[in-house]
Image (cartoon, rainbow, N blue to C red; front, top):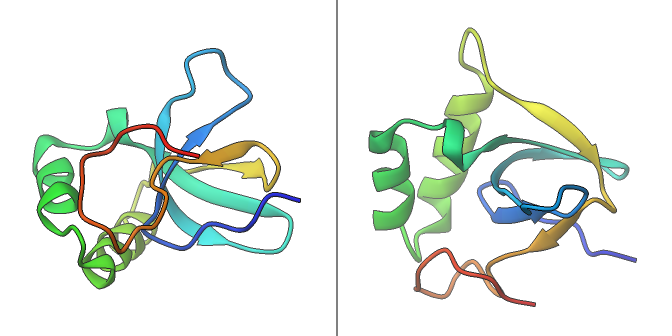
Length: 98
């Protein structure tokens, strides 16, 4: 079974050929809701990159995105993603991992 991601974690959606990167905004036992990084503004991406390893800031960004008036959120089953960051408390760029 795929372990659940945490809010603010960057994951990849595995049900598409391009495996787009995605910011997790909420999680329940069966599904993950988030927003594509490609859909975020440059400023939001900058905030996420400079927050490493500050996962509290990432969670705040994810919560702010989820509560926006017109969020660009979508939901996938818990089995349709892969971790991109091995441990979101470690510094480093958004690159593939296990």
